[in-house]
Image 1: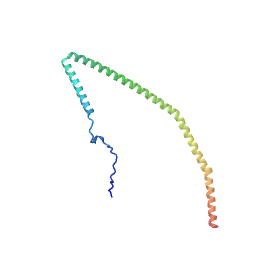
Image 2: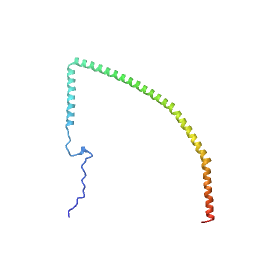
Image 3: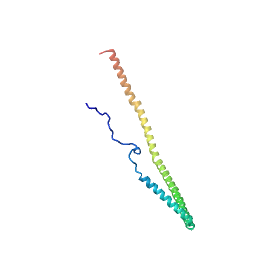
Image 4: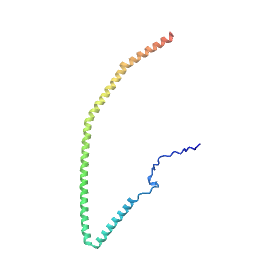
Length: 153
């Protein structure tokens, strides 16, 4: 007889592919390192060039100062717009809350009034209709039980 293999092979799905034995594609890391070196060389070369050309450095400095001023101006404008829009939204939400109060309060009042009427109606019905019926049925049942006990059939 041949031995039966009880080992069931499952499909190989690696939950952690970073631990697999397959070689990892290193091209993105290499491109990233090359790009970082190129950027460092460009800024280093620009720094050396500006060091030996002070007139160009002064012009570039003035341009950066102007751009920083424009950026600060735009940030202030955006903050003002944000404050105005937030105030507008707060006012609109306040109007919506007041509208809901005007519309919902009467409805809630009507619901409360209806529940009070229903409560009164159920109390009346239970006292004047249900209780007498229950009392009558229980009395009839008691009389039947007494007759059954006395005249065993």
